[in-house]
Length: 105
Image 1: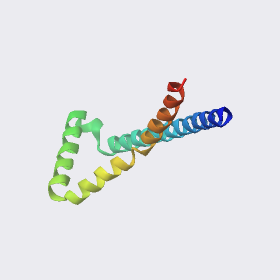
Image 2 (image 1 turned 135 degrees about the horizontal axis):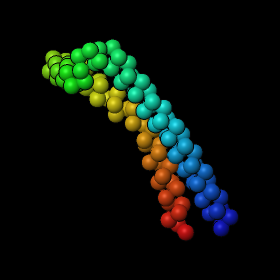
Image 3 (image 1 turned 120 degrees about the horizontal axis):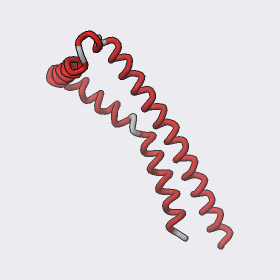
Image 4 (image 1 turned 180 degrees about the vertical axis):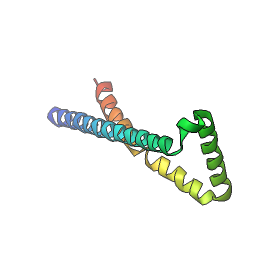
């Protein structure tokens, strides 16, 4: 019985480390992709010529206009943001599995 418990504990530990590593890698990749998209938007918007504050204001007006006149697009964007949080769920699951292992000692 103790050998089976030890194998389960080791299996949980390995699975927790794998989930934590994969979630971390995908999370870093998504943050890098987001920063790239933000940089592309910043370069396209002409922020150097107009100024940063007016560029942010224009983006806010565009967001409010989209939400007011096309709520379906706003819901689709909110869904995309929520779906993009799945690497964070992997990290939390990995931490939970590793935390349970250390809590059993």
